[in-house]
Length: 139
Image (cartoon, rainbow, N blue to C red; front, side):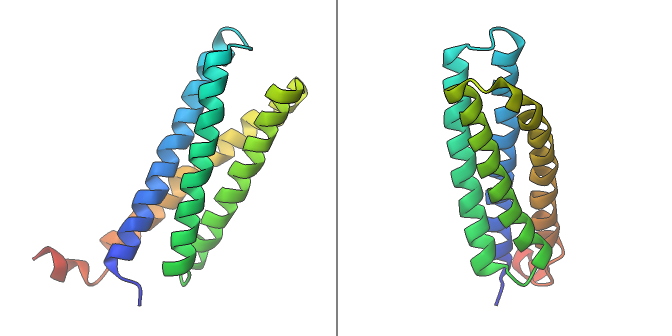
C-alpha cells in the first residue's frame, strides 16, 4: 500500500533533483558566459552532473518501488534518469574530447530536463496534497 510518507519522499527526492538541474544551468552559465574552458566551473558542472544523476536514480528507484501504480510518475522518473545520463555523456564528450558541436544538442536537452524536472516534483507534491489520509494525519 502506498502511503502519504511514500509520496512525500518521492516529492522531496524529485524536488532535490529539480534544484540540482537548475544549479547545473547556473554553473553552465558561469563558464559559458566568460571563458568557455574555465576549468573550475567546468569541474563544478561535472560534479553537479554526477550529483544530479545520483539523486535522480534515488528518486526513480523510490518511485519504482513505492509508487509504481502512478504510471506517469514512474515512467517520467525513469525517463528523467535516462535523459540526465545522456546529458552527462554529451557533456563529457564536449569537455573530454573537445567535441563542441555537441553543445547544440546539450543545451536544448538541458531545457527539456528543466521541464521534466519541474513537472515530476509538482505531480508528486499534488499526490501528497490530494492523499485522502492526509487530513487524518494533519489533525
